[in-house]
Length: 482
Image 1 (cartoon, rainbow, N blue to C red):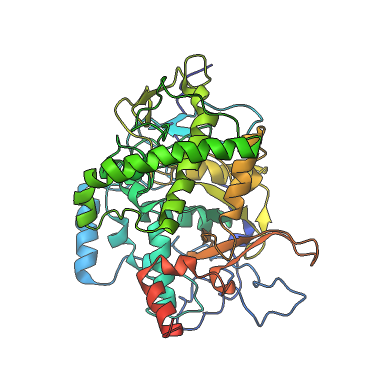
Image 2 (spheres, helix red, strand yellow):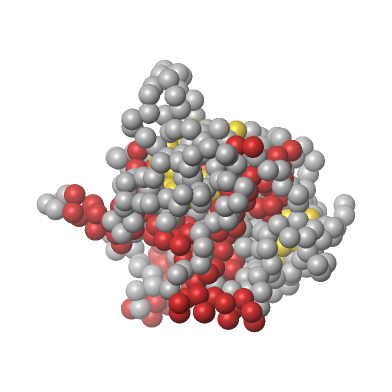
């Protein structure tokens, strides 16, 4: 197996979709916004669309002369700041051929045919953004969200807060540029806020074959070897221990079938773990609790939620541990450092969750499309080579798992982005439109196809709103007595 193979040092030549350029009239502005005359709006949900047409309107694009995305802020101070940053450290365009040797290397874990033949990489060398995209592209970020809600409204603010908490600004802007260039919609699973700094600093991102999840605040209660600064990194540990990857003195973890025996094993292991958390871990993290960074379980509902995370890590450890041990397929490529998986090519550096592509859309709002075309493979390659986005695999919607445990992973992921309890996807469309969207499975009883819909078109789904300040204010305003 070739460990690392350098790429040719140039960005892919992206196809220009005919649907992304038009000689016609720009799209209609949504209420509360005023679209520039030279740029159309991406298709958005519309209740007034006739039934025989796409429920989300016709797809529109941009004219040949239109800049890719929002212009810099018109505020003189912002413009001057961005100019000074670009002069001191100019930012390399995504589509310009690289003048130096490529900083990206091909994924050494690629298995032909196992993942729909998608393109993958593991980032070898840091590619830190040269300037703050938040300053140089303020107009783009100010217009995030569903255009049916005016900029500055609680609804628009809530959606913007959700989007920015789920993807670093640099990655968001890169995806929007690529969507605009190719006429392809890009749906992405959110990335934890605490992983943003690691991603933006150029740390390696998780290759698709690694099924271990990135760490969350709850892992601090289950893994004594983690600190708050480690949250967001990819971890692999036996939650029965205090944080080492493996403890030979512990009994082996059984299979999850039969379910009764598995549940008995989990209950026994959790009883011991909970006692350790109460007696040792809560006192250890007292300073973080005082600062409001973490919150220990205080009632049985919260303890039950933590138990669920414990069980998930237990099953994950059982399913994935052999892959990293001697004789396993990844043993010669990685080393286990406590609860962390480190690439041997990047010793001492944590891996962070990549931006998980969910699916691509073409032909209208939310219309899912397979990724097995040359055009979409080039879109994937562009997302792979983008400095901050660093895509590691194709859309989960296209994934054809070969193992039962991975089939369960896919089913869980798909369900995690459906209403009413799921988390919306970050949906980037041509024309600079970025919104929150749910995945709706196919329903044979109503003969409806699976699709993406605006998060606002699932009014009973409010969990995502509760995760934002403006969303919480909106719900409070709508239900003042609750």
